[in-house]
Image 1 (cartoon, rainbow, N blue to C red):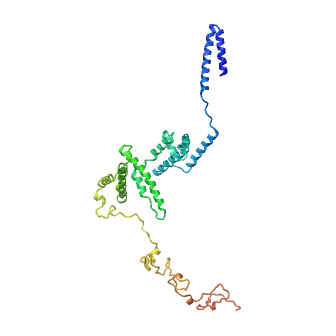
Image 2: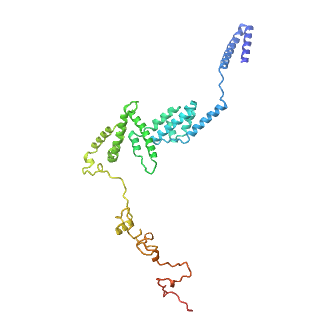
Image 3: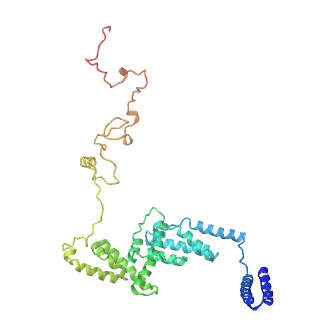
Length: 371
C-alpha cells in the first residue's frame, strides 16, 4: 500500500510539471493507481478470518470419532422393509445425539460416515440415481423411497402374525420381535393409506381396525383357500378393510368356477384342509419286532414287555445268565447265583469248574511218539 501511495504522489508531481502532450498519459496512470489503492483499502477493512485453534480442531475430531464409533455396528443391505425401518431409526437416534445436540456443522462428516456403512450395491444404486443427497434428510428420503415400498401392508402384518412362539425362550424375546414387526407394519399401513387416498393425512383408529380385520381375512384365505389368495396377491395394495378383501375373494371364487372349483363332496381342500406333515415311517426291524411282540400296542407309559433286542435276538441277563430279561430287571437273589470262575487266575483248572464239561480231544490233534 505504501508503494501505491508513493506512485500516486509521483504521478501528481509529473502531471503538474508536464506539458499537455505528456500530461494525458500521466493522468491515465494516476487513475489506475487510485483504483488500486481503493481496492487495497477495502481488503484491509475486511476482518481477517479467524484461524481454527488447536483446541477446536481437537474437539471436532473427537466428535467425528464419536460418530464413527456410534455407526460401527450399523449396516444396511436393502434386503427388506424391516431392515430399512431399523436402519432409519438408528440413524435418526445417532444424528440427534451426535450432530443436533453437539454441532450442526458435523452433518457433512456424519453423512460421509453413513455412506460407508451401506453395502456396495446400495451405494451403486445411489450413485446411478443421480439424486441430490447432500443433506441427511435428502439421504433418508431416498432410502425410504427406494427400499421402503416392496411389500404391501398385509404382507408386513403377516410377518408379525407368523413369528414362531417358542415356550423354552423368554417371553420378552417373542414380544420384542412382534413389537418390531408391528412398528414396521404401522409405517407400511400409513404409506398404503396415503397412496390409495392421495392424501397426506394420517390414518384414523377406525381405518387401522379395518386393516386388522383385513389381516384376519387374509390369513384365513391363505390357510384354507390358497389358490384364491395367490390370485389376489396383486390386489392387496388397493384394499383397506376386511370387507374389501372378502368381496375380492368372492369375485375370484366365482371366476375360478364356484362350487365345481371348491368340490361337491364336502371333503375338499377348502372345507377340510390337510396339514402338511410328513408321516413317520418305521424301519424294517421295528415293524418286525412290533408285529411279533405287540410293540405297536404298547402305550408311552408302559414298561417294556417283550424280550427281544432291536436286532431280533433274545435278551440274556448278564447277572444270572437266563434269557428273557436284562440285568437291571433281574429278580434273582445274589445268594442263588453260583460264582463265576476267574479265568485270569492261573491256578484255576478246568477240571475244578463245576457243571462244565471237560474239553474234548480232537481226533485230528497231533500226538507225540514220546508219550
